[in-house]
Length: 259
Image 1 (cartoon, one colour):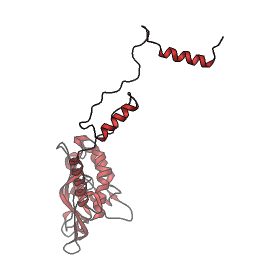
Image 2 (cartoon, rainbow, N blue to C red; image 1 turned 60 degrees about the vertical axis):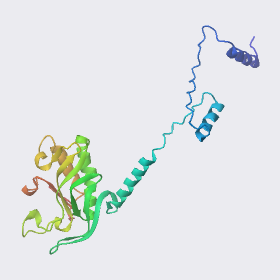
Image 3 (spheres, one colour; image 1 turned 90 degrees about the vertical axis):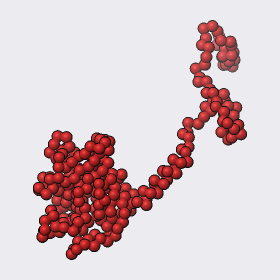
Image 4 (tube, one colour; image 1 turned 180 degrees about the vertical axis):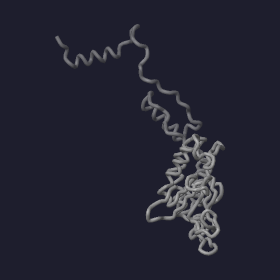
């Protein structure tokens, strides 16, 4: 005969309350409460909170997993660094650090309007502070982000510095007297000869182009510049560029010129 459901329930409660037998497990599988470390001052809010938790359940977790607040000194230094970065930005971009120098006058048609002197881009230092306009500075940032940094990756700890071989200069193309003015004469060009990595090693256009070690990376950087800049010249363009990349922001109806 089946017992009524009420009697079954009573029997189950009685069994659960019965003393443990010799073969029964001696401990519950529930985790035990962690020992509490009492705060120095029992009147503090966290002490009262712990007493409330223990009163609620002896198995409750007495400590929050929320990370401790950072020391005030660290937060202050971080804020100072953030403000310094904002003060050092040019072209309205905190990733481009330098100083605004306005109009640069030059002989004849040379000169730069709205010139800036760039010292670092995306945290990568320039070996010399380079004068250019903001269009060229932004293009250089795009190339660093999409060309140089991905090509190098984590080799040597990543890129620490760009080796700048040329920027604003009132001169003709390829430094030839009497030649048509270069885009350098208008602050629209920058020459990059390679980069120094964080471990002190270097990737050089002159020594690395065509080699098995750095050649593929340098070619990747060269390709990434095409389209971002109007003109991209490298070691295969002519003898004048065997040791550097020439980037400028001149625009042509036929599109970018890349060699």
